Length: 462
Image (tube, rainbow, N blue to C red; front, side):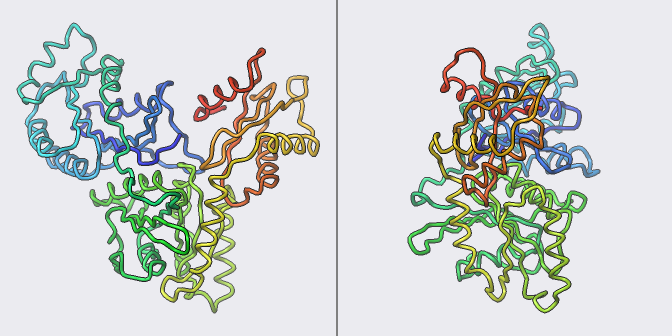
């Protein structure tokens, strides 16, 4: 599932109106495709969702803003940030409790925006009570009210049907040159993202400051170099959750995560002086959650260039932190001196080519046959695992379907072996790749099997 240019849908409303219940229903239903988060453990208050091939990012603002403000101020700030940053707003009210002064105040704010707002009256559990419970809310004078029971599902289908036409690519770059390589710079605050873009571009395109948090939004720079074009996306710093108290910064984090959906390659910067932190590994995990190609830059290398022990410790810590993605290239760079930057563009080019590379089916089946010959598949329930054929389903990252007699019998160790064998055999040494295993059934044609695999590609096998 891709979230390139995905719409940002924000849920806002008073506490206990059902935002989290609606969030869970939207991301957990079987007909909603939701990507898991590999390698990252954290409280999730956002999710990447796709309904009928319409991708969007869903945000539960109740989880973003947990400060102990008064209810009115609490919701007002949530609404203001949602109005500023979101593309579509779901404003939830409590049908059982009725219309409140807080609801009226927020609706007054929402009327001033040109963005699409869905005014949702939740906790209406049946059509029999719909008219009575909706009646007080018509006083708001809004064009449409959406009755809903997020808990039981009443009105949910209508709400989704109303949402789908508005899930367009809101940030689509229509004026970019063809084959532009889109590169997003991410990392903790003050690791030098804007300075790095400045050094690459050679001019003060970004505002650079020693005060962390200067970049509040994603800023794009189009750069032409030789015969190639690059879109450089500078993003806000992603703080550790416990230190993220400013409401605007919390939404800027979501914008940074959204920027990942617009890029081909994520470049994560690490501060050589501070070393590898837990938050660095989380930022790297965000990139893999959205299946982006990854380049890691150790910035400020000039500060440790004369200290061999610090260099060795830094590289050892980084190797341990990214052991689940050993293919990611690592560059040692100084944005201040310009050292090492010239190596970045060739690396971007190689990663980009691999990320979008396609392979003939015959070549893929040769790799599969060589893998099986090199390491015989294990037994499962008294019979040998068999692999019949493979085909490429997509790119960015490269995605391959492997048809077998027992997908559930493939141990993770043999899956890892096949993945590494495909990586070596296809020369994909710098990008993630995915293998999807599907059982051969009946006498279906190869094409029908591949379509079925593609339909199921975002579901967990285990």
